[in-house]
Length: 471
Image 1 (cartoon, helix red, strand yellow):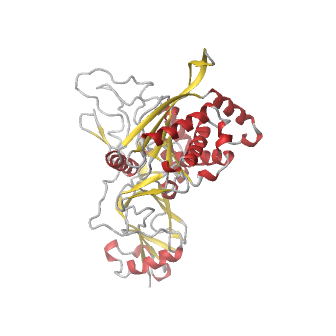
Image 2: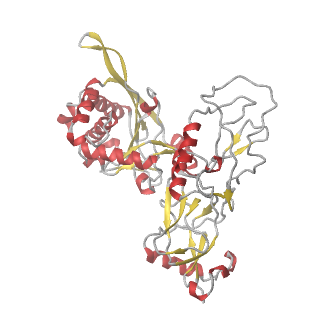
């Protein structure tokens, strides 16, 4: 007799209440084993691959791709005794034995690879499924608007790309998991690609070729343009707007930033500094054999400078506990690095960065960046941060007023490094100059402490040898 077990959506970390089903790696009738990856979900913080807690045959998939389900909700049914009856005789979700949830929980715990949920809210929420592939009748391209053209916002940088004919099977584009991952990393919609592989399957080359053609598109268009800016969402009737549901990382980021901005009173101090010696040091490190295989940038020296400043002024490495009405001073530094990814802003952190050598810190920065860009940052990588750096200089920005990462007392903005006229030893010379901005929670960090920390960072960037005296 078949035994049907429900796999309940677990909490992927930090008490998250829901997740989106991104991609199933199995289908009904497939045989699975314990700890085999069966589904990829997207939480408010990261992409997470969930392993199977059972060995058996997939009897039913209860949560289609593109839907959002609450933690604790059944997402798949597995027949753990497939010899008892054909897999095709699997019951519907509502027909599964009422004892299944009670049996499933211990089984998941025994597997050891599945995270346990913290509970389910009273009412579930379900996101609208992703739009189905357009029919051939509508694939020739969007209709042009009859509204008279208005002033241009941005000029298109390349010729528009016509919308292709879409070929799918059972409502899904045919593509292997590595190709789907590549498309997600590049922000490419698979339904927009004309497949060239055997059996009308989308290949890696198809994704790369489409991405290269799409790079030059503008984010704004004129009325009457052949192709509007493509985004995952719904284009309104007249074609002049695209509405995209706020979800996952973007939603969590918005909530966190609003809470931070309106909970912690922000104060920001600024400093403009000559970093010519730091630039020379970076150039020397790149030639060292020890750093030859590690990417060395001015951000590495900035990170080390901040760690030294925290060691000299440990009061900056703290948080405000509102419920207990206490200031919590951290005796460790988990250094957060704000990273812009295709899924939105993420702030993973380097654990115990204060204990690292310069080489270890460089490797940590390199690994953190690569993981974030690949969309593989785990919830644990972003938890328990103590102080953060946001490198706005990579975008050519001089400085800004950064908003605190929730639960932290300070965040440092590192601006673009530019060659500028500068008074050096009584003469105007061309020097490398940057701007720093330090935002702090004014409930526990006053202006004097913030100024001393920023001054220490600036001193080391101006004269890196000073780090040997203070470290």
